[in-house]
Image (cartoon, rainbow, N blue to C red; front, top):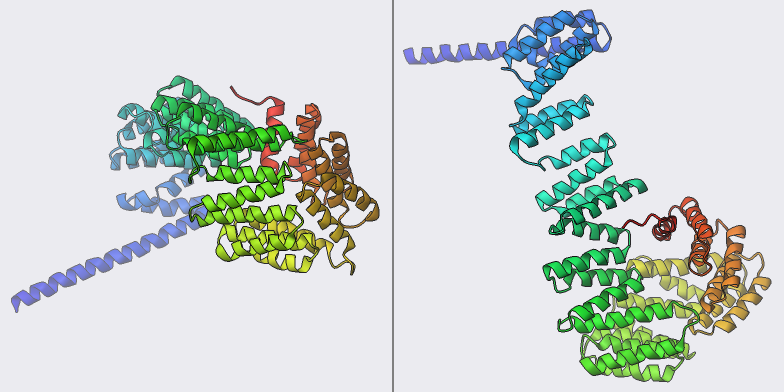
Length: 609
């Protein structure tokens, strides 16, 4: 019974104490809130009387420290403010955050030298404690005292003999101050120290938007590559940056140096070669694969590199108009020599296919092409995807021969064999295009609308473009005469019957003046002239589109190709630059934007060595 009474008394005391604490906390919260309300209303005398009472308790003083100090400063009660802050410093055993508040108070009262001294004391206090140091950095940042925040990190680095700690935070502080070079250096330090190049690159990509900043970045990278020749990191970041800009030769120079220095057996260089090829930079793709072929003739990837080298040459030859058939025959000879040396296997089969396409599309030897492609199918040894790629080519050859029913039969075989795959979608797109060539626009659009939703981006874009063309140019009249004439011209061009196509386009422009297809007709004719090597007529048509149809679908296409023609064919860089700039301004969302920007910079002389 006695034990029970003692326990009951103890419990009652604890309960009363808890109740008192709860009451005290509730009262404190109410008082603090009242003080804040007075302060917000600008009634600083009332706020002071509330905060002054709360400041007498060591614990509550910590909570109302900032608003009370701000209130005293507003009232210009400097002596009271200094007394309060010094008491806080004493009660906290010299906490850095209270010392910095004291320093700010000294600044307000024009005691700048003493203020700097106190800031120094605060920074020294935290330099060996990363957590406390970052708290102080955040404090300085919130008060926009960025120089002091930077100094705090630098002092910590000195104290801990670490040149790269908190590089991200320091980089962000430099960014706020507009010190781009220092920011770049810090982000690079972070990538190097943490072995997290991808994160550093992502931050740099987010931060560097301005052309001048990008130039600074390149200069810093080149400087570091030269300064630290045995440090692969800077070369790898430079390679990544050049790839982003699609400057593949510059990327190749760095990748080749790394490849030789670290004996990488061409792994990174191979990836770069394929990237250049995918981006249609065939000249530099050829240079890259030529290096690999010469450097590693016994490598297991040699057959692949050899084929890609010839293919790059092929693409370059095919881009020059008029196409020299003698060069095409030399390419076929190169493919044949490669097949003789290396044999026909999985790594060289694509060379057989390439030969067939050259015979069909550039030498007009369609029957020979069919024999070569059918032979490639026999040699495929059950590789269904390769077989189906060759079948799509065969369908195209039959279309060249004006045998559309044979073509659609083969396309449909691939649709069935490669259902719900990119190759199957490609076959479906070719069948849709074939229906378009035949003038069956309803069927073509029906298939194209399906492809817009469920396929790869490239095929979806092609499907969308052709679907839009059909949508905008059918239904206006019952005969759809202009659209049928236009699709027939596209078939002639597919069959490389360019002269016939040009004659039809000239007639169509006159016959369909004012038709919605007028700009498409002139644009198609311009591109055909350029392919034929008739630069003067091509330029004239492109200028017509820019002047008469600037807001139509072909406005940006015409501007880009006219600029490119002035640059590459007519040696008029100033006109080209003006047009590239016009493209970037008038058509900010154009697919040609990235290349136009690159070409403009090169013409301006922005290349960095």
